[in-house]
Amino acid sequence: MEYGWIAPESVPWLKENEPVLLFGAGQGTVELLAYLEEQQQHPDLIGIVDNDCSMWGKSLHGLPIVPPSSIPESEWSKIIITTVSGRDQVAAQLQAMGYAEFTHYHRIGTYPAASVMNLLILNDMQRAFNFMKEGDSVLHVGPGGFLSLEVALHCLGFRPLSMDAYSFSMHYPETTHRLQQYLSVLDYVLRMPQAAALGEETIRRRFDEVLHIRQDGRAFLDTERLPYMMPARYSAIPLPDNSLDTICSFAVLEHVRDPLQAIRETWRVLKPGGFAAHRTTTRDHRSYSAVLGYHPFSYLNESPASWESINENKFYQNRVLPDQWKELFTRNGFALLHYRELHTYDLSADEVAALHADFKNPDGTLPANFSNAVDCELLARKL
Image (cartoon, rainbow, N blue to C red; front, side):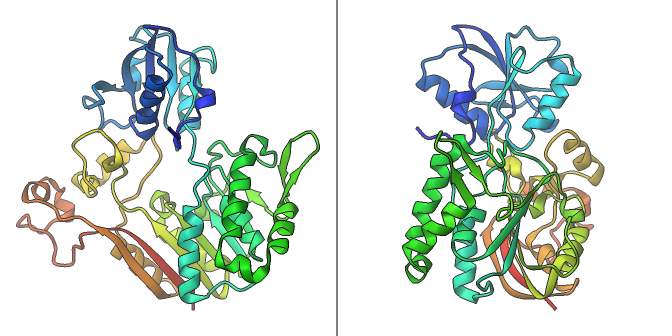
């Protein structure tokens, strides 16, 4: 089995019946459970800790989800951090409680590294609208630990750069342990239609420009050709005005705390006529989990104060819906060239009844302009 959300090499050996706490009620824990079964390891998994208070009292694969305050009260030997987006924050949280890495806890959650999905999405937009020209600068916001898109863009003749608010296990510039994954990116680019026009020799030469493999086998990314800025937030992009041809992100906008400021920063750093290409995962991220009780609009059940409380100690998610993203761009200096709703979800009568009053009419019905759209992608041009 291939594991996308955990790093198997980071999983410590867990003895038979060893009492273990997991930290993170998400896909990382689901994958760890499968990994332990595959490795025939049978520790005593006593529960799953999560910072999301809306999860407490529920269960995941039969394991109770409990608050961090229960950690000192439990008898455990190890804590395994399976969460991905918040793994560094969780580590700091455990350190503040007096626990040490490798002695008390281990971080195994990792961002999926081998995917070329973002390249596929951007390439589909490029085929349809041909908005990126050879030599254009392209800022990728939120690469999430792996610069696959940036490497591919350089091979195709663009000038990529990237930024992220968190490291997400990024190894930069040395990337020896992910060399095979970067080589798989080269293989994929060579199969793209654009590669035939450019020629295999050109693609391989450009790949060698950005990934240097030494005689001892160690691999390093070229920091001049692939600049990477971290930490850097979308609300304050560390680039000059009118300096970029394109800015893109994938599953990032839903995490910004100030959506309007993010749009304003996008407008500021783009050159006149520059492009913004985004795919936004607007659904309640808890609905991805195997924990029951959540649907794509579950976060609308909460008051603003309650939602802030839920997000206090976890990777923040805003509640901007697809139609609202479209409106934010068009009202702040952009012309919308492409907009597509990716999914829809029809709320049941019981689910409508559970929504907070802020999101309903006084009589308890949904507003006439409420869309059942979930997730979206858009391409906008700076006017």
